[in-house]
Image (cartoon, rainbow, N blue to C red; front, top):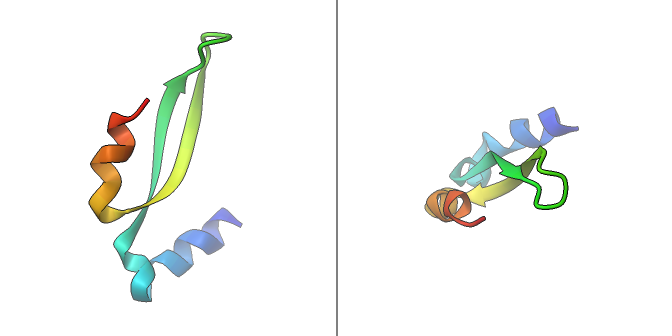
Length: 51
């Protein structure tokens, strides 16, 4: 399903969005988990600044 979402984002108005993935350390276990979000290109830096 993820491939389908990425494929549809490459055409039309979806081209102005990006799938962002970052590693976040869990406060409970200390293990790293991934946080994924589809973000508008203007807000990519904001996504990586927040914790």
